[in-house]
Image (cartoon, rainbow, N blue to C red; front, side):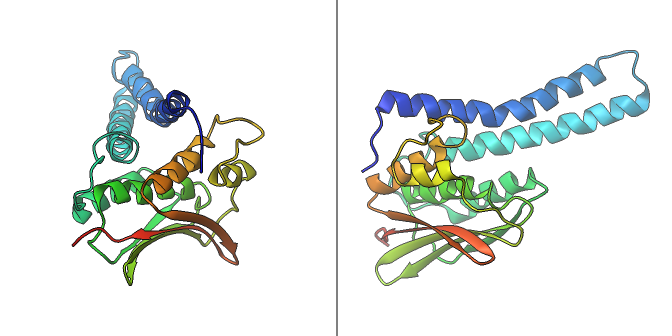
Length: 216
């Protein structure tokens, strides 16, 4: 059982959200400086406007995804709207030109609370899948719901702090950086009765979570 004081976990998750929105905010500020600098020519202002639109789209995609995955929007057991959830995934990956999304969700029997697990698993796997493909899979196996998120192609193995956090152990470098994400995902799985296991095989690294199907 993963254990951390709830106030500490909330603080680390909040820090993670702030970190993820800092990059597009920096881009927005730089774009605004170009747009409102009268010394800049038309070409530079056009570049600033383009960067501003890109930054706004990135910020919106990350905030909408984080609101569902880490916030209170989906803290219920109603069946998830798979189409709306897929849109959150697609727009998140559209902000990252290096990593492709392979959406392979084959069941609609996923609750909102369970979709949060899949979304957080994906946040973990985006790093190993850099410059490759992140395959997001959800299938039914008897009375079980099986989530699998793989990093394919050009991928890297799990960092030691990620493996420690997935095992419920505090990494040597503490919970800063990306270590809290796998720990938070483990907590979500335990609360929902899901197992969560990492794996490393040739040409792929992945996470698998298995739990009960929600009522139809």
